[in-house]
Length: 237
Image 1 (tube, rainbow, N blue to C red):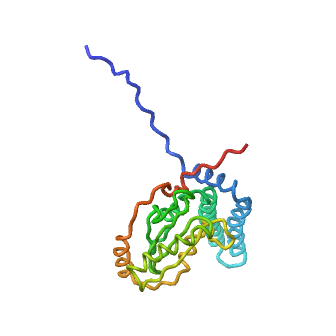
Image 2: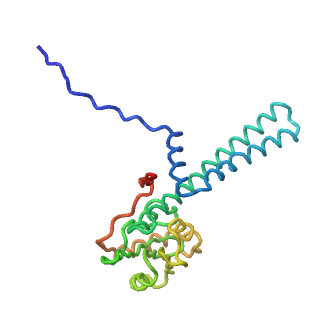
Image 3: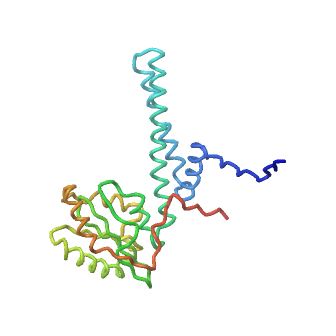
């Protein structure tokens, strides 16, 4: 007689709906961005009011008026999604700003296609956890330091010397992410990279990457880049 299989079957994990995900993103962002509600309302209402105004003052009949209003709603929803995404990214990086490996999260998750780099630093101070990351792109080589300016300046100089030893003609730019007033905030690192003037072709960028591979090291004492998409907002007390 065959035995019945009483082994409980694993429950299927219910996928989270898109609206539910957006609501959670909004709730997380609102904890760090007090103006987000007003900003999103303006993004939604201004295009809608513009569509209504065009429907009233432009000829086109009822159908034309409906199309203008619907277009205003669609534009408003699109603006809400764009603005919410950018403000949520900023809020997520604010949660990890100042933690060891935070710059690695930017290098891993937020670099544009014109830049490439590793979430692991090329130099690290095991005692202070200050670190230097290296990215390459059409703007040359960029060294991104994580820590106070007075502590990381020497590390930056040393890493630039190593780069210049194998690539003397390539521009090297410094970016410091730290507590100093003139430092670049974590969420502005991508913008800072975009402002660097291109000096290399795509073929030259590939060649630069190949030359720099000889300088790769495996520093210890610092975690990999923190993934801001997995950071949970602290529970309200």
